[in-house]
Length: 71
Image 1: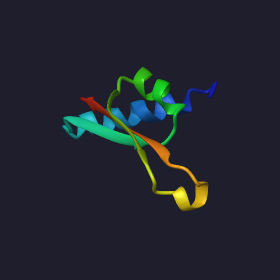
Image 2: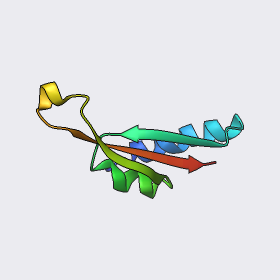
Image 3: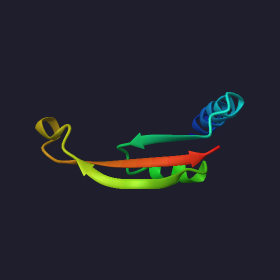
Image 4: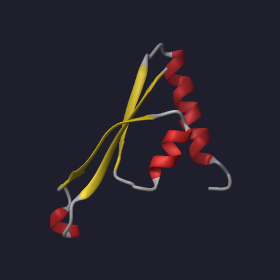
């Protein structure tokens, strides 16, 4: 975390997409902790919900967050 590797990876990916003339990007996360990180990178929360994908393993529903960003 202290090396800011996640921020650098996101920045490099967004730079690549912009060079390729991609107008926007979205991503999905199942991490409650990721919200602050993606928002700090300029992503906007588009959807928040719960899914049962792994209920048979975890015995509970998991959160899902969809973020988007215009480039």
